[in-house]
Image 1 (tube, rainbow, N blue to C red):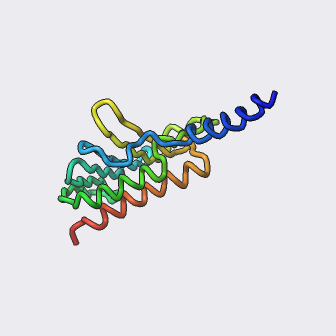
Image 2 (cartoon, one colour; image 1 turned 120 degrees about the vertical axis):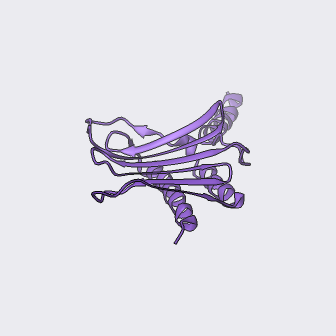
Image 3 (cartoon, helix red, strand yellow; image 1 turned 90 degrees about the vertical axis):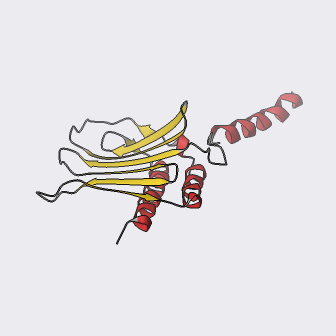
Length: 158
């Protein structure tokens, strides 16, 4: 009896610590690609930001009429990319999960993030009316969204 009482709490502590642990490696793999996309449903407006190697690519189709697509590339410091990656690890990006939608909105604006660590390992998360996030996951998701947008702003030409 005492044997079971001893190991049950120990088992629960081990189980709890493993469930919430991120699978993202602490050190950013060399081939890591980070992508962010934002669209506004049926509107033609969109933004994409992709970081591959040491290049940040920004593409935007603004909502203004008769304005074409804006696209630019910039070399970034690998230290900036590594700092962003550490935010993915800190916020356990691979653990962000969407809740089941209660209804479907066909023209819902959406935001999405993906991180590719290797050809076999990719994680992504989305936020819109069809892909709801819990409060905790929403905070983690938007922390990363803001960091990606801040990095693009930092490198944007004046």
